[in-house]
Length: 295
Length: 324
Image (cartoon, rainbow over all chains, first blue to last red; front, side, top):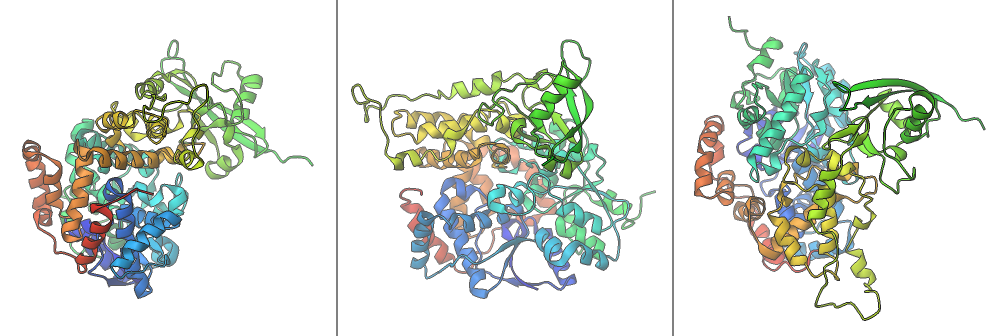
């Protein structure tokens, strides 16, 4: 399998560990990633709010890059997945398509609308398959209870995303089970992490993140995992603030999706960039015998 | 033909704040045809098993908007939700009152906050001096003008979006999805004379607290798609008055930020959103993050083909024209 790899901004910058883990896991599973140094940002939902047509045009340009190479586009971020998919949908509106096509023509780009946008979670569970991954597991994550945290834009709006059930998804939990860990079901798994308003009203954003982590913890999660690096910022980089806002210690290790897969397939914590997290993942690693329990 | 019946375990939230120390769930088991609406099941419970069960309902046809409640964790109309698919997916049906509103009794909630937020947005036409009402006639609109309302007139004010919304749950300043979708309806109504005032007011009145999680759009029984109308309001507000507060500053800052390198300059974005004093307050957290993630303050390399991106900005942003 060969895919056009769209890492998105954060995985190339402060969330570099997501890129490391994605490359490790894809290598292990024989998925060839093709890099395109001309991909631009997906707009992260913010450009859509400031200028929706510009946002569609920028993403049409990205989609055209993959189309020219004849490849499906792989995202590792729920928000990138949402924005690129939304661009495909909005280009089905004749007025939008006319305006965007006219701008693209002026930069010598044509997009015929044929690029499928697929998130790593979808590729792992739908194309590779949870059962095939189960067979590749070298170090089962037995004993680790993991709360999946999907990230809004992978699921919603359901009419546009056209993926699995938006209200009751199960692909992530299926994958967690295939890795030998135990999935934890809780209301927050399909809720918002608060990230989009982190810069609008930080206190509210932190409270929302804190609330979701509390929820996962109350249902027995030892760790959480997310397919979105923006959720990771809210849940990991700002977890200290989230904890303050809900008035309790959280100490919840937050894995990026491919980090969890990589651990089960035999990668070391360093290869997956785990030491880069703000909240130590050691408590989770101890449960699966990856690091020694301190005496 | 005889309908096939299925066993339907139903757990209903029960609470009377006047007499009960804590809420509880009462479990009932009915035999129902799979197409039976949850509302019909509840009415059957009330008539046959427990006459004290309290709920709101009226039309039973998804028109009045009275029977919104939380069914298996999702805010929706009881009359519009058949029991069959719920039982198939969850094995039982758990019914709670709507969220984000205080419980009066069982499934009935106090909706004063919901209506109050709506009323604050002045949901009525304000006369437009540029388009005076014709003497003795009703004001008519062209089909194109009516199309601009999109889905908003379908709203039946059931409250499902308000119940599903995390911004409502965590921040009293947010007016709620329905109020904003209805506000959109007046902002694009050519007969309304207060477009500017409405946008000016909402820009600092909680508009930017929407996290675009789209839970409202999924909850809405009438496919009003509130989250998309909120997005439209944000773009209209920015076009009218540019950056006024953190939300619009952040959106505009983000857009300008990407123009420079094609990808995000993370550190610069913080400076584009916050003033110096606010920046200072961010320093301790920023340093904590940077210790683990040194890229946070590094300037990213520009993408190849940045000139193409620049050209798109010139065509579509410097002179944006009408947004389709």
